[in-house]
Image (cartoon, rainbow over all chains, first blue to last red; front, side, top):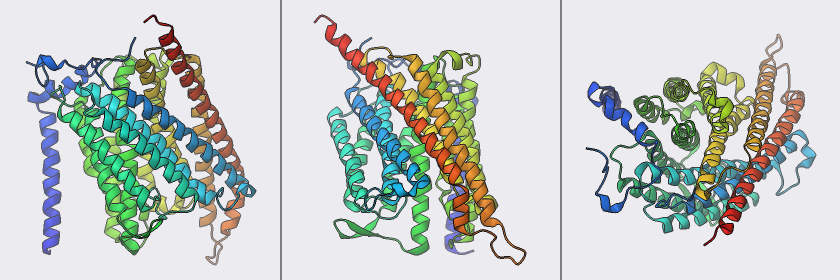
Length: 61
Length: 467
């Protein structure tokens, strides 16, 4: 196995691990509620937030 | 109901209007070239021939109608999901006019025969450079809007939007790398099989980043809005998104099966194409499961009909596509009319149905009115559905017949039919296709009339209101 093959294999494994981490995080119990929250919040987006009411995500605790 | 305050929707109106204009051009030219195939005497050289008009049809359809609409809805959706106005409305207006200039220049230069001979990347370097400028403006405006967002989490549509912006930029820049020899002629920076490999890496990922991720962003946004019920699983949407992104960029070489590119590249493309069924169908299931307890809306809500049929065609498309990427099946149907049948199920069935729904949902809200006629919208739906099915089904049958004839051999191994004999046999299907195009065009005209009456009615109402 030459150096290029080792490099490609390493990148492949790295990408797979990144994907596995995304799946694990998304489906962890800890992130279940926050992972589903955007689908509820997008239902009521008819008005932008006012500039005077603080920064990002003012409705969240 | 007035235009929602705080959102810059004028540019959304502009992009929707112009995308409809280019969409009409694409379908008109499409119908013309379908008649030119059925009746070759309709080819009038040099400008009105199939060879000159076909790239105008695809560029007007994919880039004028498709990307024009995506630009409109990316601005519409991004503002709402970030709960903030566009970063620079002025830049967006500049983008609108440069976009129209690029599409018009594309039509003119292609009609004049200036063509890089690369499918979906036909534009010569001055026009392609203008496209790059338009895309950079667009990407900067959307990204900056997301950066200054007032929502911590990003809804799935925003992920698809960001993927589109990055993906198209990378694909377009790499595949359009060329050496200009004059203002109207350039040569690819790559040679031979490498050029083909880069071209189809681009070509199939144009399907990914233009005809898959943007309509998915739009579908994920407008299905919940149309039904009034949130999407079934946001987390499933996120996983499907990342799966799609990890897999899609490897699939391009399935266009080069049996071609002189390395065997492992072809096998890799084939494997990833089949694996893509999983994320594609995750989106389909997400749409179907979102309809749990809501299926009655298919009868009662015309928007839902467009969206659910759209995602169903996406599902069918993403089963048919991977099947075609398998060597044996590809050997059978490649170079036959099966392929345009497949492509038009995606463009007319999946992409356009979702875009029609999005326009029906958006324009009345922006103009502060109601849709002119739901009945006309239903007529539009059935006409475009019938036209598209006539097109696709006739081409699939023609493709299988042609493939069978091309593969038929005599006992001594020689070919049983000549290529011309296969052409003559599929004339009846070309007539059906042309008729399907006319039916689709009729549906499109009903749609445009409905939209025109909606907008005209809104302006009349606005003028009648006391100051």
